[in-house]
Image (cartoon, rainbow, N blue to C red):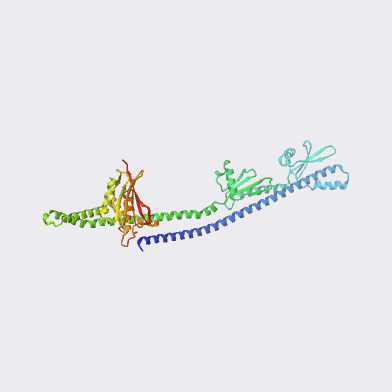
Length: 505
């Protein structure tokens, strides 16, 4: 197993492990949130049911009070009728019976007055010793005695009227009902479930609210707030027995909303954590690779320096010798070429890890020099061709490093063709870039390996280190701010495409 396959399997294993942990954590959190949310909903439902039962109780109490008021009216009418008959009859038994009816009213406050409101008599009223007439006259005209229509008493000489108010017991009961309604409204607003709640009348006018932002209660947005709450939960209609309807609108509590949203928030945060972890891991790995590449390059340049210096010294020594002492002048020239080549390699390696100095170069000349150099050192069975669409095109490059890129691409093409085939280098330009295609007739690269071939350590050769294309990518993208990728590949061959910034005239 090569280093790339081992790294890929580690990545897959870590990804699967992270997915399992994420899914397990989300499942457990969601189950817990659903359980708590269900308890919250049950609490809300219980509050709503209690609300309806309390409303029914108040309604029944109000109906009872209406019945008491009717009975009270009937008692006053009977009392008035008895008073009228008492004057008209002469039968002693009837007089005794009617007197008992009149005397039997011991709790309803009444005032007997003439048609012009002159007080004739009163009953069941605590009257002060001083200012009796003024007190009774004021009481007759008060709202308590004017609340019910008076009962008319027909006499032979004319009609008198009986004015009455609620009995003391009935007044206390009505006050109790009023307090009960007010406390009931307070209980709706300040509910134990901490729900956002609105209490409105049948005209959708706000009566009270609780646990809700005041900005949502302004006249301009109140209708929208009510519609939103009605869409969330069905409203509760209340009849509190005071001849008016009330409606309760409510939403889920803030805790319930947060519980329902928590799994998604956790998923989002977990995704960010994975992204940050992967980003940090990638940066650390790239930094480590950079240190390895720089160290390797510097060490290579250092190791090559010694033999290069020695060879150069020998060549100088041989040049100083008499001509007849040199048996093969061609040997000297070839050794000199190889020394120059070694110097170029050392220069290339020394530039890795350092800031590359870019110079404007002619594209045609640069490409032809690099291709012709490799053509002379390749098999005669390989056909080289160069196609350049426009002359006088320039780009900014470090020539030593750029030539290394072309040489590596051609070497890879030669290996893919096994020394037999064709290599074509095509150059054209777009609006902003110089585009260089290196096309071979080799075996092709699987589409799933288009990115992999640029990874350090990936190689299809048994003895390869897998560094060539990795160096190519680093030189093009890091030093020249360009881009290199596989444009297309099949069984008929592969096309590597390089994009470099165009130098405008």
